[in-house]
Image (cartoon, rainbow, N blue to C red):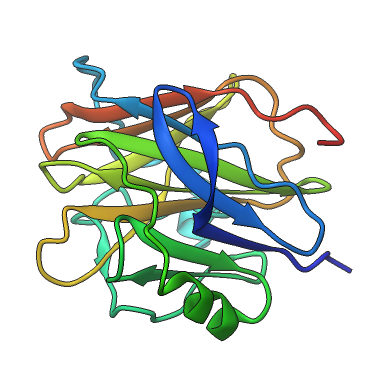
Length: 220
């Protein structure tokens, strides 16, 4: 049986690589690794269509690996403030209009997490930057983070160690909030090994922001 976990963005200050941000974990669990990086200024060819780990037979059979979203998705899904969105492994993500880049990821008591976060400041990411973190439970990993970019990303991808580049799901609030969140469900993939790279692309394939961080060692 999975351990219930709760992560709230926007409570306890913690040092991030190259920026500032906040995170909280309760139920006796360590906060997920977090990091922040500005626009890389680099260009990289966008991956369109199937990822390397999806075979033609899987596609024909309608099989979709955990966390994958369609490559043709026109950017983030627009969601109502506070609305719970299932992001895998029993977790729910919600975006709050209060504060700066304020969101919650909850495995239990989602409503309580939202109420607690409504009075919080949020992450306050630098312009054109992206944050990232993960929760790990055995062989299951769930990657989450936020972006703050002048241009709304058309896609956000993750590359975990030597693995393929995979598509993350994205959420944002109505209007032009200037920020949003992303998530990737890596259930059953094993504890992440190697550098985690997160990249936000615009519709032309240009890199809007990039981030690289090392997963916490096992047992932390």
